[in-house]
Amino acid sequence: MTVVVAALFYLVPIAVMALCIHLGLYAHPEPQPVATAAVTTVVPGDDNGDGIIDEDESGWDCATMGNRICGWCA
Ligand SMILES: [Ca+2]
Ligand SMILES: [Ca+2]
Image 1 (cartoon, protein in one colour):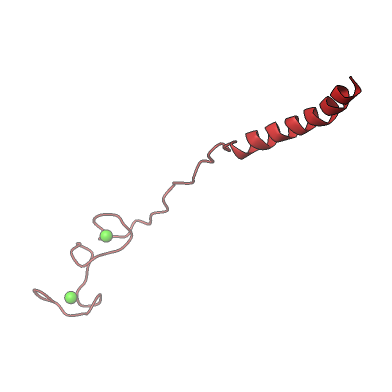
Image 2 (image 1 turned 90 degrees about the horizontal axis):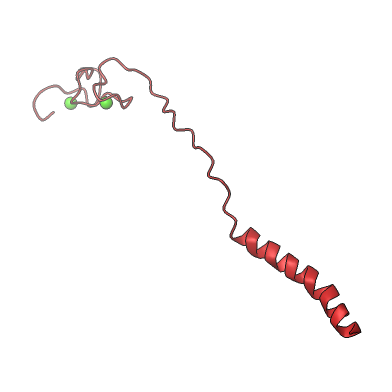
């Protein structure tokens, strides 16, 4: 009887700790909301609104931007 009591005395806390560790290992924290607010700056001539005036957009000035060479295939 004493052996059984002693065994329970030690095994129960160990079992509880093992259970807690087990649950902790498989506990998934709540996913935190990711700040998705895009910081977009409205650039005149940026037709697709990506913040960069590309060469095929209306705000592109071939005389001052890119390779500063204007014309077809330039
Ligand atoms: Ca753009
Ligand atoms: Ca060019």
